[in-house]
Length: 177
Image (tube, rainbow, N blue to C red; front, side, top):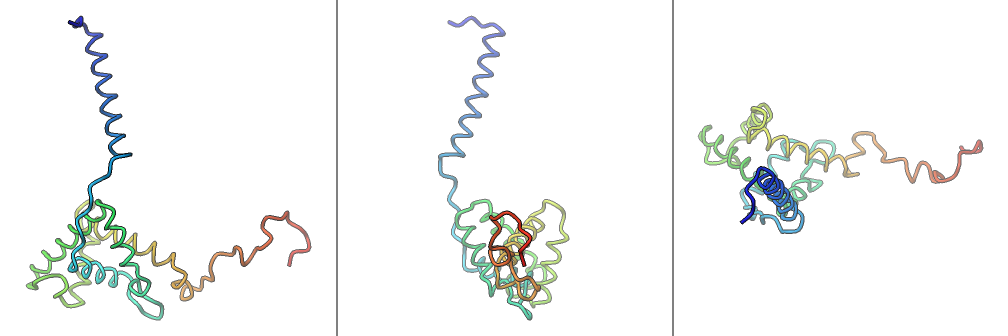
């Protein structure tokens, strides 16, 4: 029987904490995470419509033209946290639509859909609609503007290299034109 001293309990506590931290690290690092639920066709349609409202087509292509929605849905198939965010956001939109006397979000008029997107943007920080809005807006903007097809309407010709400075690896010289 071990000697039940304060030192024994300190060692036991420190060892337990270290093993807990190690176990948590190992489980996150090497064990597979939760597999996200499949995305439903309704959720695909809601997310696509929502992204189209965020970045519609005009003189330049819209987000749907650049397949931003497909990129998001593809990532959600492998990311449980993103998948949950989409699920809860779509549920919130459908609940709000029912309060507007529609069966679901897609049954609303375009103006009402836009109002719900604006309501999600203005929702309380950390709430489901606000997180949904922020996540979709950030993802959409990042992927839309990283696509070269969106650049001409902005007047952006693309990165200067390698087209603009083909000799960047050489030391500067006075004969550059």
